[in-house]
Length: 265
Length: 162
Image 1 (cartoon, rainbow over the protein chains, first blue to last red):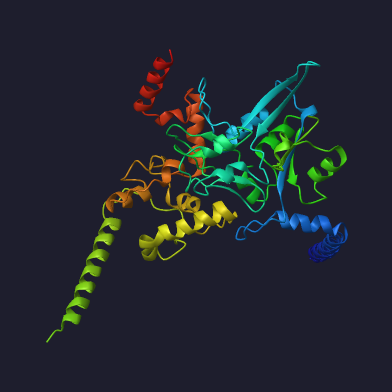
Image 2: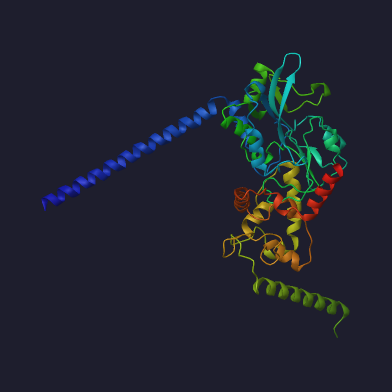
């Protein structure tokens, strides 16, 4: 009988100890939580604000406080790699048919050679997301437009397929869908009779992913040649790199102020 | 005496009753459309039956132009909830006017709408699965539906080029 009482007593003590431990654990947690919260507020408020701004709530419209852009480091890009192109095709459900000259190309690899030095460079070219896009200037229906955050898109609901934008674009960034499509992905609706082009993975950007499929693929492959980010935010990776190393625009003479910049071109 | 006004009211009530009766019959009787995933539509189903295109139209401009991507009235959300697999685990396509939720009613009401020439008519998982199968079989997913007319045009243009 005594034994039983002893055991019960021990058990009781144990349970008390457990609750004590839990209590300390909880208080520790709340202390750590407070610490994290405090440091989150205290350390670099600019960064915090930027993060809040980029992960915009789904019910709010995009603003011109951000301007999305990409920086391609040409020196990191290798000629034999086309991971960005494959990733783009996969993300948006573009399935180029072999031998077809008319399938949509949202991003393509270019290799250029300087005839005087024989120096070759390879890099991806996509829609350059101009600040003053010629495609928007010429569009007769207003289907080609620039979003507040700098992403240039085709509103396929109003696109009549006239292809003026394709003629106007100095980068040949746009494609026309000539044939009936099947198995389009929900995030990238596209179809016959409309023009389409790189949309800077607008569905990912709106979801707060802060990256594009091509940039992700490039990073995964270890090249890290494409950086996506906010050109308006001086603290963003892309702005810092542009500040440190500079970046050129393709056909800068046209004064379009492209959102896609190239480093080492 | 029943006045002309009253007759008109009665007529409207009668027509209304017939519409309700028809719609109930269509929904309850012999429908091959698999039931939706959710229990309650985002709006009153009766209102939705006559006005869903207004909400989808409004939402499409909000999404494309302003980047507003709320789920409530998005076409993607409609599809994710309403297009469910049948007993065999297969998702109906829009071309199947008996089993596809949207097509069943559009076909009944003789509405010809081209949402699904560009938009996916089934949830993303189903599309990805179809793409996987096509790729495994060495078929280009887009080439699947290309009509023989397109092939003929391609062939003739190749011939003329030669």
